Image 1 (spheres, rainbow, N blue to C red):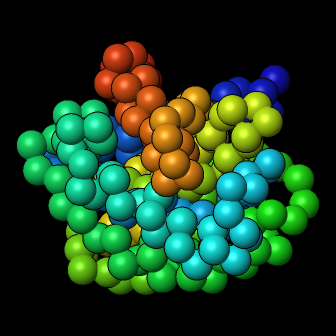
Image 2 (image 1 turned 180 degrees about the horizontal axis):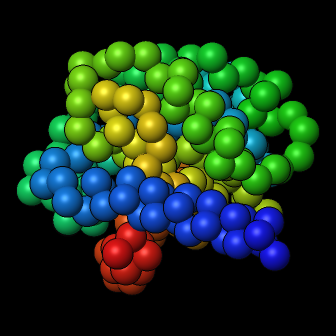
Length: 205
């Protein structure tokens, strides 16, 4: 019985600590956008371009709309922040490590929270030294299913501590390889704005 009570107390403490961490996201008026990280991504059935071209060119092209097209990718209103700053070089450098073998080889696999914590711990110090950072770890682009999957991760930039992560999906669409997949993130943003952000805030109370 004492063992059960001890486990319940530990679980309650962990839940409380997790909620306290998540509150940092919702209490902040500023957020730092890092971009789309493809280091754990898998592309299934994506044959519009040669794998070499996708690795060398499109990982960067898929990141660009989030930074330069606020009408379609409204980071500030999506995450309800008055100030959005950008620190794209960290993810840009990480994406340079992606190879065609890692991107196109093997099968899809869910990115675990432990893996996300590990990746965030490896982030180098970028232009922004503190505050709440947000990055999307892309899990897969599956052309057969017409679905993109990614994990949005919020973290404390100064400590590299993961504050909250959630798995998201979005349907691609539109003309051209760049926007066909970039638009899936526009749909993820829409879902966050419509319902998910409120759900996450309630969980953090």
